[in-house]
Length: 328
Image 1 (cartoon, rainbow, N blue to C red):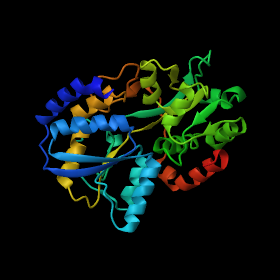
Image 2: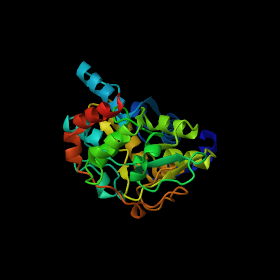
Image 3: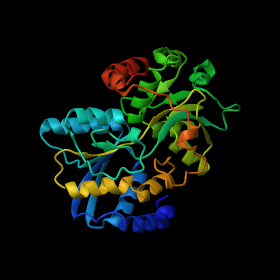
């Protein structure tokens, strides 16, 4: 994948140089939940525009990233300068704890206001929905709705990511339990009929692609990219609607290289950064960037609405309830 994207990277990086000021030299550490190979491509593209900035990366699921950060804060310091993690829930919690630096001059023109923190501490970088993956060799009639998964035969062959590990799962579970037509009763039915939870979305894709499970709950870009590469998987945007996260980027309060951290945020939000995200299979947030093949425009999606404040207030309770049903 990295080799195939090299010409794209070079073109995007050159385009960005003319519009973004070069940052000072030095190093930054990015804590992220983005897949390792994709993150390596992002760093390579960023370095084409900012060759004097060295980027170190720590990658894990959003929940584990935040847990590591909290432990480091408790110990007195963290090497993290920039965060690029799945959801606004985790970012809002960090902001409320005073762990994010405000960046009032961030280049947010063209971004939907809904993905911009009102206090200018974090900014959405892409649209990632959660839907249903299925194995095309095992499933003759693909599901069309979330409720299809509650059927005993489907639930018995269903896997999903856990909110104890995945930030996207935190947001998805938090969204689903707020919907009157679903609630915790939906998950209780799945558990009673044999559904299981693993860790992250990558494990869900592997289990379905190998035929260990026929169905999975998963973020959209993974199965859509895998299908394009020939994997026996299909993806469904369920008829009731989808949850959606925006993988926000933020600067950690107390960074010792603010200029370089700001340069990373600038590049990520730029036309070049958005185009690279689209080339990796994500739905971009700004106009003028072509949609990846097979992805709907945001206006074509039904997004399940959720109260972020309620989700934050119930975060620990939701995780405990999920663990009671599925373990972890």
